[in-house]
Length: 350
Image 1 (cartoon, rainbow, N blue to C red):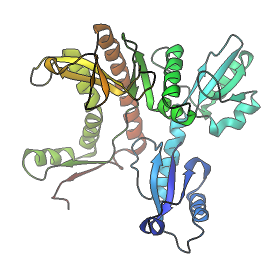
Image 2: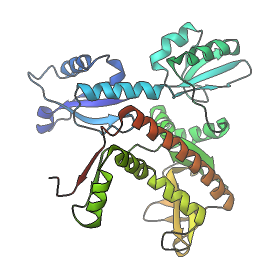
Image 3: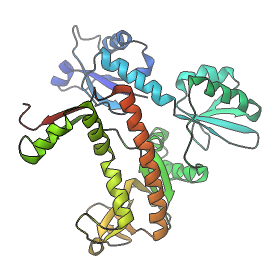
């Protein structure tokens, strides 16, 4: 859920970061949000509010220092859309199932349906129901209050539980940090050497796309911005470029100059278990750059050469992740069109 840390310019200019976190889901209207900001800084006669940090902003929204009523309403609407695809039903035991995900807005409904909240489930915090309630709960979800997320393939709950345990140990048992890692991870896989490789949820880039103000790049800029159709096509290409290039290189094992590449990944030293990959850490390196299973003193990471089995599994996941990301991009465009996307040149527009 989106939340922001609200201070004031007056305090900031005086060397103070005093303020507080406000969860946007707690405020039905923009006026309610402003009232909370004023209450937070009631020791100032005329505070000029300043958002100093953001967490969990929906796709495509930049972390601005302040938001107006239109942006507040847009963020709230996007939060509601994201909530629709953020719950899962898990076959928890022989007699019970669990509902996990973003359930805050329907907690009263779930309680009335006979659910019991438990923060210590092996699959993460969630609501536990007897299996006799499965049809009732499913009917509630199907009403359109929330939608089910249909995974492309069956989720390996044992692997996700192992991932959770490793993160929990690495973060010293701090559950809030564990939940953040779990939320950022879109998919995971176990490599042949025992490292869990993580595929992060890709952010939607809907900010300003910049071009040079002369030469071929400027001519390209004019073509890109000539219509909503060309802007939309560029937005899709720009967002998918990173994953498309990785898929291409992992498939062909060559870069654009024809150099032979080897797929590797980095095991992050900060994890006390010693078996954790993080941040889509698949890299394509030239043969002579690869130092398999050695610690790189520059990054404090262990570099591992991927086996053919690793590469095959990673490629399948990347293709699945691309399809999911493309669907999110299309959902974003359906909601906003190109109204929040801007294009500019480095000097001509200034």
